Image 1 (cartoon, rainbow, N blue to C red):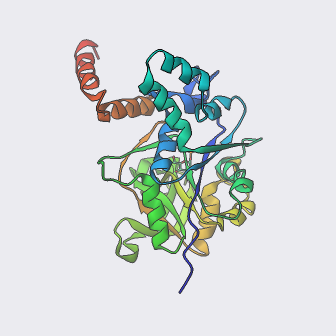
Image 2: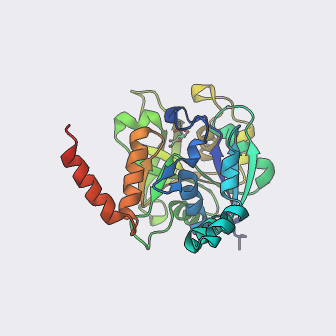
Length: 304
Ligand code: G1P
């Protein structure tokens, strides 16, 4: 009998970017702290991992990102003040954020690409598997029973002996040049959502695309990724690409794609960010009624 693959116990969140698309909002605060309704985007990402049973969060950060670490720490003064004012629920919520996870921050000293950022977490993870969640890709559950997206990938990975599994989504062909693009056919092991990837290309130039399956920012990386990343040379945009290291795994031991269930929103640009905010508010029991009527009113009120 073969030994089961080691479990994923850490997630890596690359968070070193400058937030260029969110200026001036991201001038003095990290873009990861910008709120979707009342919750920083990075907290939504962390909550997905927590719901998948993971406690260790490795943040790969740059300068001016200390407030993210503070956000996941206890804030005794603030909590005590809230409690003394009778705001118990608010104080409990703050404490809960810190109770859920252990955050370890590590610096990416130079912006040399996603693969380089992930490799910065290697000394913390060691030679073990890990998950990567990209903060711009928010994936909301569309039913209460649905597993968090990263858990869907973890389960798929366990089903294929601990191989790497990355999130896939069909996109219009004219958009595939903005993504990692995966080739292969679904139906692996009888699962219509699972693909054995035969080729993986980071941001294929327009006209060369051979697939409509885009890589979305959720990855279960096997321990073999570390060696692959160390041998990955700069690729698209002159950066060390995680996609290129994964392509090496696809050529070797094998790599899988999983068409996850859930609603993915690219919160990495202004309109996508607004969409995520509205989608989230419309699905929050305490906000949905008021948000819906506000939206209807606004659309009537403001001329096109
Ligand atoms: C990154 C990855 C890309 C993936 C995308 C998903 O690109 O390199 O393969 O498709 O995230 O959001 P970025 O959007 O950071 O340029």
